[in-house]
Image (cartoon, rainbow, N blue to C red; front, side):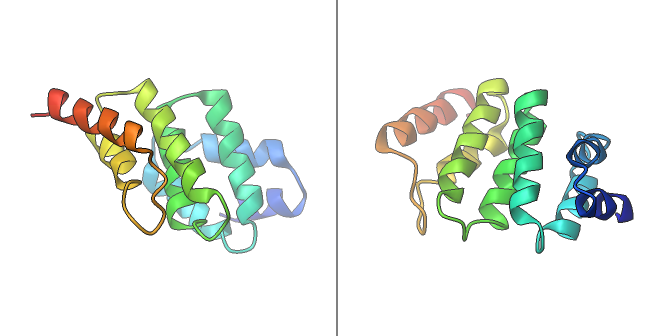
Length: 132
């Protein structure tokens, strides 16, 4: 954990990214890193996660970023809509992940109802047709 803080303090974005990527597919370790830096560096963290998402392009990072936006950064304007985008991208890459599908459908509920009616119908239908 000290490494990530040092990299942030010295503005070493590349090493911050590498520090996260070391734990790819290890949700516990990645969330530990997030918990360690979220309070004082939330926007910087978001940039790290988005950078990794678009460079790695795998469901794991889109899920982590969506989760971070939904649970830690939901107070930011547009965070819920961006979280939905992350989960939709994860679903595109792995449509067999029922947890991601359910996460998408949760965006049809208050307080931030950002899933359109058409999207809700599409994902609900997909769920019913593929996960009975």
